[in-house]
Image 1 (cartoon, rainbow over the protein chains, first blue to last red):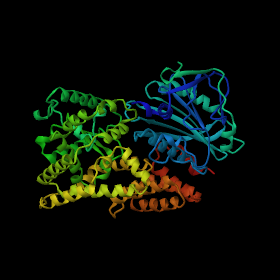
Image 2 (cartoon, rainbow over the protein chains, first blue to last red):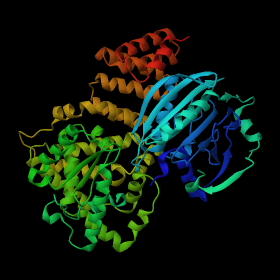
Image 3 (cartoon, each protein chain N blue to C red):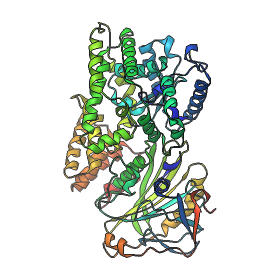
Image 4 (tube, helix red, strand yellow):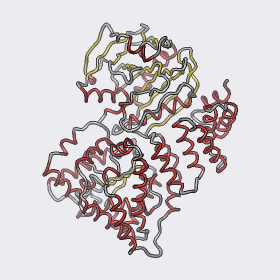
Length: 230
Length: 380
């Protein structure tokens, strides 16, 4: 089966167990700045993207252009001390690695790798180049990787930039099949990453998430996961 | 299809008995329409498996593992099987009725010598030859439409295996028969048969160590591995030991050195896959078991990585100790300097940590993480 190919698909599986496997989608217009990951980052897409209502974690959101299976752009914002990148519900076996604000760049990439191996149940995960980079104006780390998920015989590639700002972790992560889709999409994603603005939360994150009301796009679409907008 | 694949212990029954592809002996072939259908499904799964990204295709490794089976059961019999080594860091092996045998990489990490590996391969092979899986398949079919149910299950191969394990397993007589047939084969073909009980001791100890928390035990059951499908290990261990005593003779071997030589190139990957499961207790047990009192540089480095990854209070200090020991055993193990440098920096010794990172970079000038480690080694 194809569910555990990556984070959002796993989320879709969880959702399907609890109810209908539908995500709501909202169009992210090109050249229009938009706040993402509960407002903790601002990005300006240069093309039209679709934002899913299914979140890989409470501090994140996922976008796609052609469907989650073909390209997935995920924003993780303001992950605090003691929190995992993905929600623990993705794995019922072991505790996912937790972020610590004194982590070094290589610790972040190792945490990312371990998290993915556990959620994907796949040892076929290879970290590639890891180098200094900027997330917007902030010093961070860029890392590329490739993997295959259980029972899915295709290779996917990913590239992410992560930075710790005011003790919290921010990640922008792009994943797509190695064949065509990664190369087709990464250029635009890099441009978006260069323009990211980080908006560190003013209040404690836990309070923040409870008090802020969820804002919906003005043009929500409710479509099946298999029929994402092209 | 994969739903019909059984773990050696679990579905082996299912998988191990239908009959012959071109390469299999005639009496292993399907005997009726039902068996023919199952056989065809296995063939289809095998075709998929051949293209899997999880397959470890290294010719030397595959030749070695097949060679162990052939030595254990005889070259005239082993030809009916095809072995596929799948990169999955849990302990298991499976046999399909069409002669397809699947060995998970986690098994190679846990067996400590050739005789132990031969025990597991021979056990699965015995299920195959005795057509246990077709007996179980017919049994299940008569009770429930379990296979149809399984066919719609979501989740990856591991999840499906686990669920299959919950509805089918060989009965005790079949397991005992497979155990004793394999033990006879091993002894007759030059392996020390005591390995059969020793591997059960090892599994039992690992099960105990991982079951320290109920959560861990549940995790292993969920993984659909050997533990969940091989109950009564104490009883098994005992009858295997008793049977082995009468069959031991001079000239039999455990093949410790040959096994280590064959696995040496794979240790780093196998250990790394295990460490990244984030199963601290199980991994520490395994490392200790592998060391058997002799801690090589690789194992010390792995232990350092294990503690560093956990990162609890005191873990960095412990990791630093292991990395330093690893370096004293093998000063060229570059990754030890990396682990040491990061651990020192995380525990406050920044200058010393940077020095270690620079040593790592000198020894691995083309490392993929050279860019970021270089910044860490020189930054403020």
